[in-house]
Structures are given as C-alpha cells and as structure tokens.
Length: 126
Image (cartoon, rainbow, N blue to C red):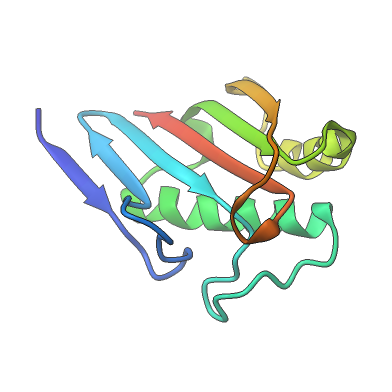
C-alpha cells in the first residue's frame, strides 16, 4: 500500500517528527492539531471556544489539501486539559458536522503542546 504525506502551509507546521497527515489508500490520518494560527505561528485564541475554532480551521485545511472534507471524517479524538471545557468545545466542534457524526472519544490529559486547552485528531475515509 502506498502512503502519501500530506502537508499544507494553511495549517501549522509540525512541531515534532511527524506529518500533518498521512493518506493510506482511501484513509486519511490527521495528526492532532492545536490552535496555532498558521500565519503567525502563535496561539491567538483567548478562550477554549476560540482555540477550538482555530483547531477546526487547521483540520479543515489539512482535509482540503488531501481532497477530503468534514463529511469524510469517520473518527475523531479530542484531548482536553480539563473536562469542564467539554461543553464549550462540543458547541464549536458540532458546527463543523451535519448529521451522521463521526465516532469519537474525548479524554482529559495533564498537558498539551504550547499550553493549549484542546487538541483534536481525525481519521477520514472516501
């Protein structure tokens, strides 16, 4: 099976030894995205809703680069620094999907890169 590395300047550059996404067959595996603005390279959001909005924009940029969209997403993982943020993240996240939501888990973690509050990874399929 051939694997294609997906990278776009419309999403933040990886901050470690990994790719933004890898396409294997009809599956697209997107690395966790944090709320870094790809233009400025910094986290500009002032609250978790703003962070989630930027994360979803970053994910959309990677999906688009690979020729996918949110309708192709079959699985997501949300990492939160505190489960009290769950409802605020859910509100923003939910606006990016229309019916037939992907499978998902949400987990609390001790910390995330750049001291952000949310990170989301995705798997999409065509």
